[in-house]
Image (cartoon, rainbow, N blue to C red; front, side, top):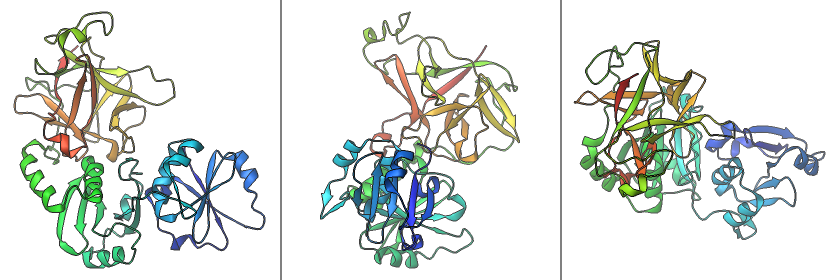
Length: 394
């Protein structure tokens, strides 16, 4: 579902309704309530919203609409964008005093207007949020933002979030001097922990001090060139495979690696980056780890930025993807989608998102399949190791 339609009757001022991240992907259409034909729209749309002053209606392609509380509009729109059916919606949002809603209050984001196009924030763990935009030229007055949050008792009162680019800042509402800065990769788990009360800004600061050595330096290396482990420059168009360096005991029992495909793969064999090319839904392919040879890659330099490629497609992060996979697509990645390459002290490479601080990792499943993605769960980040890669010339 690419666009969700939101119908706005003449008696509703949409500017008085709290914004949510999904609005930027949605189509707001102003209609005359006297002539609006909901049944006809149900034929045209699988699902849509109709705004009222005190609540809003969610229509599916058949049946009566659900009357919903504005407190839950953000998470409700996420469910609609994920194409869940009417039965799931009915289960997910119970009726509370005549309105469908979730108990989780939305957390308040303040987002730089220049970044309004960047992300939809599809993470299921913290999508119930509302937001306001601020001009990047403005000096952010934390006390003023705290007063805005306090004026909205239906949202989380203890903390709010400021977002500019890839940087996020959690602020304590009653003590705006107490803040914690973090990156996009850990946004979901950090916000979830703050909202649930399982973490505070102070405990997060302490945890990140302990983990600082595991984070990547987000600064980009001037005049960056792709090099092999011997320091030799790899020119654009030169083909290579990408080997994943894995500890001998990492994974499951050795016997479980047999029969995964046509061969047998003991742990001492080399592990490689492969492409999942069995997608049948039109989506871009994505990367995974497999000890059965490797797909072929190359690089291309555009405006001094090195992009990894496979079969004419560019490797990229989909910032709205729920699992933080690395995909392959035809278009040159945007800044938010780029992959940043980092060199290790021993000449190998690791990957992060552009300007990111969290390395891509590979979780091995039964020893013979590696899930390649960014680990965004702070609790498990303490034991997750970066995926170290060796470029093997073809």
